[in-house]
Image (cartoon, rainbow, N blue to C red):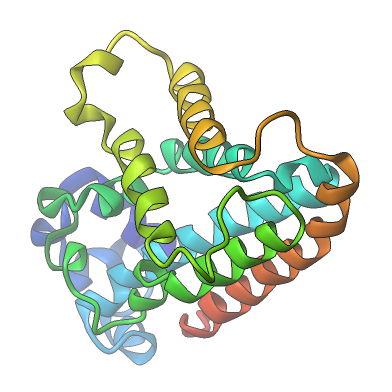
Length: 221
């Protein structure tokens, strides 16, 4: 059902797709859809929750393969690339009402666990600072999450930045990493030992996020 909903959402946009369209594409009865999702809004929000699970799982797999992925600039570079390959997640970050309709602004569904990442951000930044991988202490710099978000969000809205029009996605990801590295991490290359020490804690945060997001999704038949 979520596969069908995602395909139709991307092709036609939220307003033009009905639950009946989804049930027909999925090969199930309309009542079966409503058995698992209370409304059209919750059904399509579920698509985006699942995409967020996929992005987080991708970051977790990369971190398990290489502790260097714990560096903040590397994490955001990989996040940018992961989001770029998921048009619906890009639409969510851009607040694209044409594609997502009410999903772009509604936080009363399971989608709130995707859009509200403040707890994860605080824990993430505190972890990096403890291991010497963040220049400022988030405990004494309360605007740090805002500064980081403000510095990086433009890269995810790069359709609004004409200067990036001639750059491919890898170059834009590298540019994001350069901004994060220059503005938020200590000078020089990160200590491999610090990265190795931080990696298990970051992996645990990712795992907790995946569990939290998964709990927001009903089980499909």
